Length: 227
Ligand SMILES: O=C(CO)[C@@H](O)[C@H](O)COP(=O)(O)O
Ligand SMILES: [Fe+2]
Image (cartoon, rainbow, N blue to C red; front, top):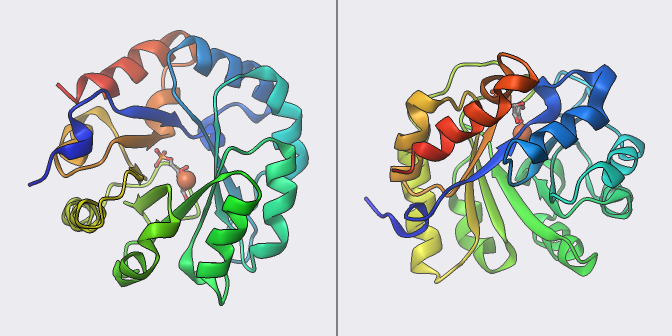
């Protein structure tokens, strides 16, 4: 098992999909105050995944509420025509699925040309062979530990082996890309994700449970998993 990236404190990336949508600005401010590292924004188009969520205008409206990076997970197909709008709205990281367009190599290049960090996302049944071909083009690899579309799902255990395999590919290539896990992440499996080689954890339901007064403790519980 490789430990390269997991040795330091993990990046905690709360997914605002689990927040109170009537108070999004407040929620983002509360997450920053509670010690979040990135704000994970799940963009769903009702086509690539069976849910519909956050457009670029919402990202733009949230931008003044925090200095934390916006980590935008695009579950949209075709995705290319949306990159510029989300970048202009204030996205710092734009992550795309290989299935969301015919030319993922070009898409990743476009994201970097826009001045954003480029992320590549792997669904549970998507093989990592694409990463072998695109490793030099990515700043972030996201392993989905649920099938995308909804928060609150159960962590798929076989994701741990996939995190290990992704870590091996990144290390072999000498890549400094972040390795992020998304879906069903809770304190009880966070340590295993980090031991497998992840350095960034997305968590929605776990961070938001208990309301704003509990955010700091919930984030701390995930960070403590690194120990
Ligand atoms: O991308 C997705 C789901 O498609 C995720 O970011 C979830 O929104 C994470 O929520 P939890 O599984 O932690 O509740
Ligand atoms: Fe996500």
